Image (cartoon, rainbow, N blue to C red; front, side):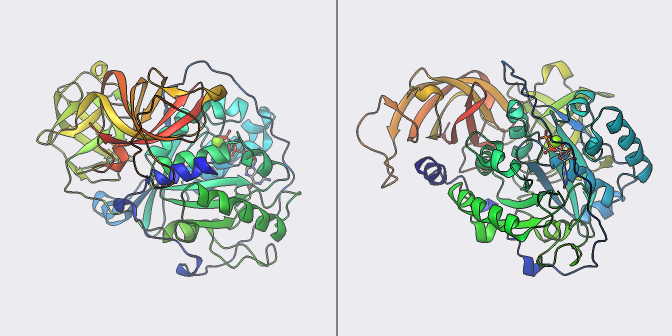
Length: 503
Ligand code: GTP
Ligand code: MG
């Protein structure tokens, strides 16, 4: 596919993202799982809810029920941000909930409470998803809306789980979740018909994979879920079929399947092949790792704790001062630091730093934080602003130059000066307009073409000038990949992906 070639040609990879590979050989066997098959769950129905405006990304926190280790202990462990992506109803929330249960974050009593609540809502099989889906709307409809956020730990690693919604109405929330992640768990339903729907054109399996790659999710664990389901029954043929169909697509989307992708079968609902390897009696053909082993074997991406401080703000609230939330993309923050909230250049002081529920003295790149600030009112901060070091502050612009791959314009529209779309770049969501097309990139040579270009169509790769109405804080992709990669969306569809080349 030419379009997919073009995404790859944007080279949205970077040297900083060589976060190692996961191979089944890297992990050691553990004791076997004693899970049993489950009864069939009712056919999930997709309740499409057309929405006019792209909602601002929202998140919800799933509070851990256990005390965590003290700060020193905590900082010793590696930390990884994992986003759960995939088509609606693939089992992302169920798998996330099961992980929290298996890692001891949720007790049996809570599960029983959820079982009853799910039953009362005629959603019996959704009780595991209720761990992640905490809003009433989500529980009633059985669909994630806001990115669920939770924490769990293995022997070696602290994980932040970001449970993205699969429904196409909530892709902006998925984008926000994926832009904070180091790796992705792509959940695929093996159930008859469900893999097919997700994989079709317009299905979110495809869209999520392409977005994840664009947003800097360098590694994927592809979990083939619902293996317990009566139409699957741990069938090797079904698993192989899904793997063989997904592999070329992942490759076309820019993933190096050998190095950056690992497939494994699980049942999120039953918890099979998750904390411990699947029993040979259930699945004699699987010799690879279970999910926890595979997660533990992912290498943490290299991060520069000495770089200039950058933390895009995802959310803010009042709590004994102004608290901002976000993931540190560069540098280190310490209690007492003086920083700037950009683009409005508000001088602030760091009063307190929280990782998960714990107060810490300092935090480095990759951490998902809550920071209490003094010197700024909550009302003066919006999501999309960036907490930045004073000496080397992040640029604030209303115009920038970018290289774009045009994926799919609505109704075969043409892409020309005056084209309007919604720009998603780190935590920024802003209307934007294409001001000028500078040059097209030759698909064969990958070099700029000499001829002046006035418009381009689907599949083109083009360099252009983009304008937004209010100041945004971004960086060149070559300097800070995570703050310089973006997507353009129009009427709920991703129309282009790109990288900032000049400010
Ligand atoms: P969205 O958030 O709406 O995108 O969905 P999701 O991917 O989070 O799916 P969710 O976890 O809500 O599960 C959807 C349905 O699939 C529920 O009925 C689950 O019980 C069912 N399901 C999830 N995992 C499994 C599994 O491993 N086996 C079986 N049999 N059913 C599963
Ligand atoms: Mg969900």
